[in-house]
Image (cartoon, rainbow, N blue to C red):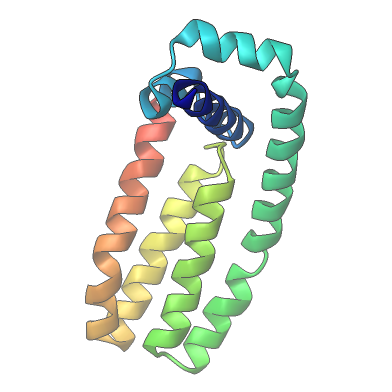
Length: 147
């Protein structure tokens, strides 16, 4: 009986992962389910409809978050401190997790480069803390752009 519970849990996890935008290959890697089971689950439960709705909602949320960045940068310019820099990083991280499209990549990279230079001129310590994060984010965006 325990095996049935595990399979049900794996199928529920697979459904959740698919709806949030993971590929079938990624789902199989996480759950250990065969691709045929995942495709059958998608078809049986009409998950494509739920996924589309979820992705539209995520894009709208990411777009809303993007509008916050200019205000956060203005606030940082007035008060350059680690708290304000952290707020910008959190918004960027949220956008990263919500937005699966890469058409905004060049603008984001240019913005991040300018922001990194600005921080370096204001607060060397904060710049050092953010440098690794920004570099990782840019590399991830570029790798998505290549796919």
